[in-house]
Length: 330
Image (cartoon, rainbow, N blue to C red):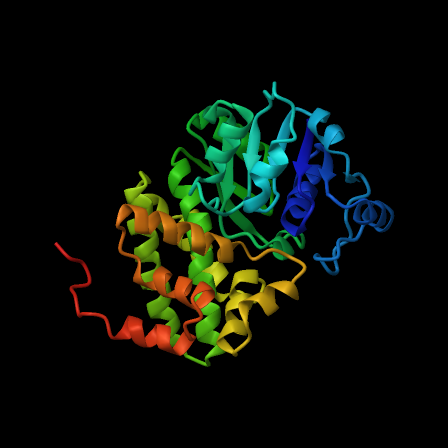
């Protein structure tokens, strides 16, 4: 099978390597021609140190080429530019798409499957979401990894499951597109908070409380948006939250750590070559929660720290000083 990958960052490239090793012909798109020339010659990705890419992987900067290539498209560009890139696609798009971008679009509050369906006029049953605890650095080194493929049409999810699965990359299937997308996006906010706590030198008690109450907020938000509660105890919920909150690979956790140590957000983002999806997702989810009157105190305080210049310590005092309540209100 010929498969095109839109976005040759670390995650798109790691998945391209998986697909190529599974016997598929893979072509990856990156915006910058210099990057494409370098990686086609060296077979080394700058964000996947120590990994030699298969020589069969081909990279291109031609969007027209990637649109015309293959029978399946994997969308791996950052969530806030998905619409911008897809608007350049042909009007008569019919190929199925696997979305691996984890975020909620600013202003619209739309999930990536909604953005794809609206922009390309594509049937939602042709859009599969692939998500779960899966750092690109570890997938590229063939560490055992499990994720979930979700689609309204379960048969299409199962097709993607078979295309991607191998001895080190195991894919489960499911129907809860809303839950899988929200879990993958919202956990990045909690990862920012985890990094902040680490940067402030807080300990295990703090981290356990943060992840537990953070998951509760994700569930509260997700179920109000139509997700199934059980999804958040799975790979795209608790699984992705744990790996992102505790792993040094997590860009969102790295950003949080630097904030906790006193750096300013704009300075941090300016120094980064990769995208920390949680920053803009914090804005998106804050707006959706406000509009729908969803109580998300932890996410609200992260928003205040990122965009309202509230100090991390003050934000934690606000959380700890809230009115006392039952853990599970009736």
